[in-house]
Image (cartoon, rainbow, N blue to C red; front, side):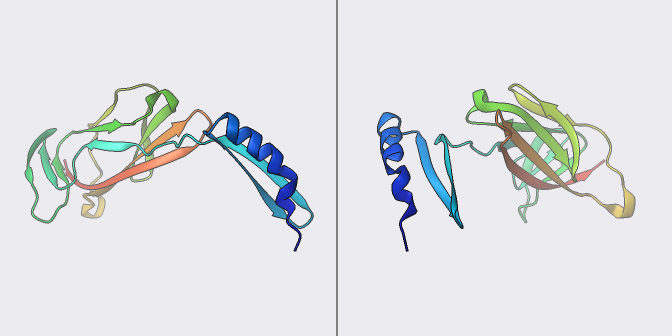
Length: 150
């Protein structure tokens, strides 16, 4: 089989020698190829700082650790998010059970969940997802499950 990458070897070597943060590669399908390049700086995942895994919160105050590692809260809870590269973040989205609740465009990324949860079928378990979106539209996720009462 013919090595089709030899056509771009010169370009690859020039760009890599100029800037180590640039990656160039190619993908071949049938008789055509796609040459692509991007900045090698990795877009990191957001980190949920609060609530912490395995803690119990009463009206937004951390009280004690849970025995089984569940995160539990009674009343309002503040969700705090850290991102290691805030200059590259265009927005942070806060989602609860698949419904978007809040969107912040600059740090600090803090949102307080105050509205009461629906007690349909005694559903107290909830999923919180945080989405970091960079300037190019790339998304990174972090999530936590918790039991919320009230």
